[in-house]
Image (cartoon, rainbow, N blue to C red; front, side, top):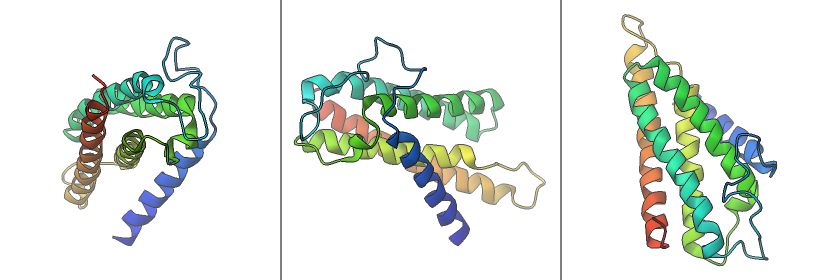
Length: 170
């Protein structure tokens, strides 16, 4: 168990560093609602941020589908899932990076951001795990660890999606 905590801590630190750059990534289209958000002292307005949040949540929803298939051994979907993790990180960088984890005037937007960040942490940990196949002696343990990360990501994604809808998003 201590080894797993260390892996999760390293993953979370890497995500914070990656999201902290605040530089719009090349993979985010110029037309993205996550580019050029205007912040006041307490974050963007709900009207300005919800389209971007919708893009991020849609990408995490796509990630959810890839992850389920990857857990069941689909190598192509595992590769697609890794690419989608990077796309979500790029969207978050474009939207403000570390500013997404600050407390905003709108608590619902803050909750969405924290939920998305937590979901991404779990999904990133999932893709960092090497799931062993039978008859490897640790096959069951690696699959169970991956399943736990997938389920953690799913819970946080579902919370983000619920809060997004409560905020008036799609």
